[in-house]
Image 1 (spheres, rainbow, N blue to C red):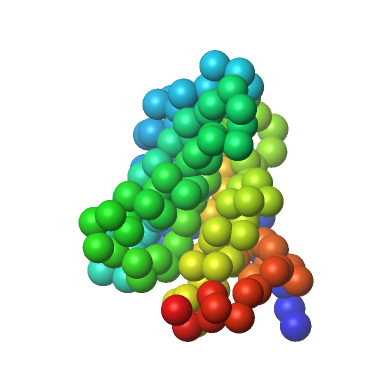
Image 2: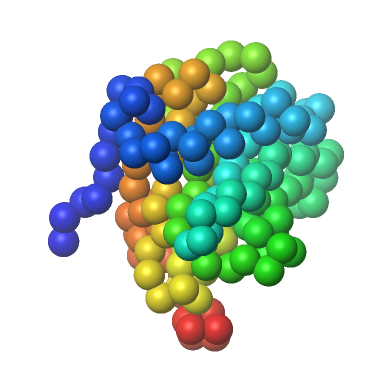
Length: 157
């Protein structure tokens, strides 16, 4: 099986749809509530009908109640009645910095994306970037979390 991961030097190398999704995630990253880590993370999901829903990182002192940007975007789409997610973008960096690597979803978020892809019966496109979008990673949900935990009840639900 080939690895569908691509790295890009700038968003100009991406499709218009991918650039729009990364721009949407970038536009909400500074709305993050992050009094403990200082991380600014935004996410955006695109549905099959082209709608974009966003979410930002919302940190809590107990960390267990923290809501990462990716699930926040998935929840926004779900609450609007849209579950056919085709792509997700994550953009982030610590504090006001740019970051020298793409910001990728944490393990819990990778599992969320994976389970959503199981329900859809196909991988979800995943785009990751730093604040300036100068460092990009493009992959899919299956590659992002290889050998993922897949409860039988998640498939086709």
